[in-house]
Image (cartoon, rainbow, N blue to C red):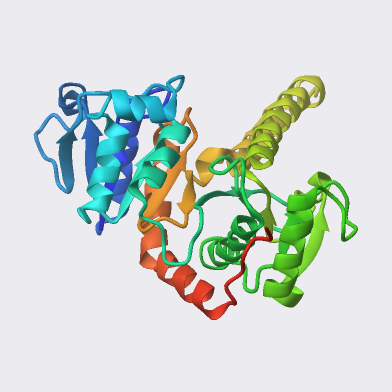
Length: 335
């Protein structure tokens, strides 16, 4: 299994990116990693003894920064690590690509490649969110901020397959993010998407859910547009960080005798729900496996992202998406 890794992507690249790749190789003997980026910066980070078992280098002179305009940067810097990862994917030289770099550029690279799965209208990013009933899939979290109802319907279908085969949900339910639970709530897009999901997914569609319902586990898959999904994701990360720091300072800190035990338990909780424990979010709907990581990803997150990419390939997630879409009625947006 060959996985292209954007060695220059992320806030801390390339050091932790390369380190995470080496950890992933040690954990999975079936994986080969192609490190894409500036060879002069990558090579010194590889083992000093010269052993490069299942490691390859693919030189890319340019890097797209986090603040760069995605499409403009892809055009102005053609020899960038993200574009070269997509080039390897399009050429069938790799089974998956992984990057902690500019998310917009990763998505734009997928859109410009036009390599969508059969019957998929628009790819979407799915991420695992913690709930009281285990993880749920939130889709989309940033790939498509102006979706059509058919896109949201397909996100529900793809999200179910992701939840079943990656998150371990036996028969996943789907909920539509909205401003109220009642049918007919929300803007025209929400109303139309609700009708499509209800008709296509039948009893597995639980209807509209509100933001407070996500972490309660009201649905195994939560569908929304990319703007709302990204706000939900970043807000959840911020609230979690705030609560953990507040608990450490105001509850664990003043403990007279059990402070060490309290901090240990708190750290275990942080580790359990930290984004690095899952690694990255797949861009579902493209022909190939694309995993998008948090910009601040370090070794553990990169290692886990490569593991997720390998798992997606092993369970043939894309083949299952194509098969599922072919069994369902093809829907059209209203005029």
